[in-house]
Amino acid sequence: MPHRITVEPSRHQFEVEPGNTILRAALAAGVTLPYGCRNGACGACKGRVLAGEVDRGPFMDGALSAEDLARGYALFCCARPLSDLVIESREVGDLRDIPVKNMPCRVHSMTRLAPDVMRLELKLPASERLQFLAGQYIDILLKDGRRRSFSLANAPQADEMLELHVRRVPGGLLTTRVFSTLRERDILRFEGPHGNFFWREDAGKPAILIAGGTGFAPIKSLIEQAWQQKSTRPLSLYWGARDRAGLYLHEVAQAWTAGHPNFRYVPVLSDAAATDHWDGCRGLVHHAVMADFPDLSGHQVYACGAPAMIEAARRDLTGRNGLPDDAFFADAFTFANDAPKP
Image 1 (cartoon, rainbow, N blue to C red):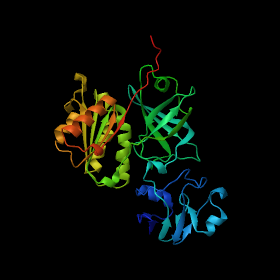
Image 2: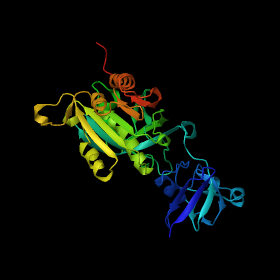
Image 3: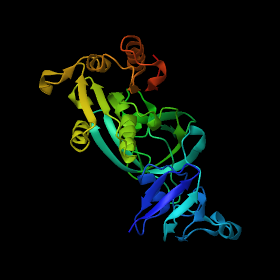
Image 4: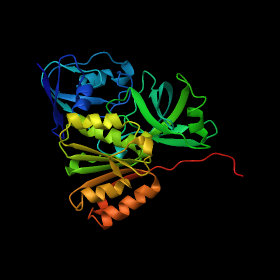
């Protein structure tokens, strides 16, 4: 029988199945408690048990002192409830709640999703986790001090690996390496999370999600986060690309429609080739949104892609379709070209 957990002072509630930890169940239920390592070593998830019985599980002595134990504290990443509990913990709901980290990672897998798009899965050290908000990004740190930014494509709860979608940029210092010399098990270093583009679940409004190219990566994170939180908000994804190959996870987005009745997916190609045999929507991706939603006054829009796409979408959706200025959230992708100047 599951145990019910009540969090003070928010009064949020969730259930924990036998054998599961408080933190893992909280994150699965969309209750974002703070954490760091998730293995009892760092103490970032420490909170107080106000009522009920708990098995505190294995933890490092430095993370939970004898004084902490006497005052009723536990590490929620390794504690398991033995009864219904009332716990005291802050919740992550603001960018200021999440620490920026600098850490190494290992390339776990590399998957070519399109001729010019590579999916990287980065494995963190065993004693580390990266807490972030869906939509944020990390900076890959290069040896010469330069950095390259990539949005996280996985939902925050799936944090054992970090998923990046890397587009090859002509002359790009890092992207050229990704498509030529980078290999699985290579070590990279990154800093993050960064960015103020994230999911605003408390709004409750229908959300339009607009992705251009690899702008799909943070949008994927947002969508998976919304469903992890059991959101019932209507979601509409418009993914624009030049040709069919640019919709590099098209089948994944199509499959989402089967399991989520409040979700709609509209792929849009701007320059489909005859060999694409495309009978779907054509043109600019935000024009497709404008045609389908002439009145956006009661919506939110999340847009990711090239700066020109973001600027046009903001101008037209707020100017012609009634979207409030403060309901447009965007992340504009810029690409650094490191080719020698002529």
